[in-house]
Image (cartoon, rainbow, N blue to C red):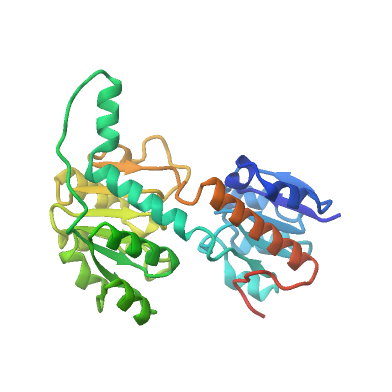
Length: 319
């Protein structure tokens, strides 16, 4: 009997056919509440044939300790920055992942954060619940310029919705889709530093890599408009937290909306929790019933296929 470590909480907390698919295979399933740090993964490593994981720290040390039993890593989601892909590839451990399952969901959440900031929705809701009829003045989206950093599936969906709101869209991506840009009137920026000074909203949808870590830093924050808003539904580490905290407290920028933090779950005294004009959600950008079903089903099917020696629906590494 194959033994499976299931750590993704979205999978576990959301009802649906993905549970039946997993349980139909006769696996022994061990459930943990991720994302798990390296120390906990090292405690568990060695006793499982497959990881059905979220953003757990699957480092080289974890992979090596998991051998020779570990046969498959199946990522629930898209981002692979928490998995040492090179180490897994060297050890011939296939990694399944789930591209194309949550782009609509995350794009919708991006606009939820933007509208919350632009119309003071969270602040006003809290006023009313306290019996305070305090009316703040917000801003329209129409006519604003949004800079989309990363025009993959999610970034494209954000661009489409931005155009529907009557916004001007500027994009940056190393792999530029000229046909999409022409169809949706997306202006191309040659570099990130070209779009940041002219944007009213900067929305991050790129992957985390050594090149993109701290993409939004103190120097770039200083070049933004004072009324600019930054949105981050990608990875917390794309933003230099200390620099963002300083910029918000000083009024250097107008707001920050994020669904991700540099430490998850965060400590109770995370510095962003005390900043003004900040809307933070607990990494729920892809957590809808529809998206969870798509992701969990694909992640489970990837794992089943790979354990059976069959091709995954999508595999991140090649041998």
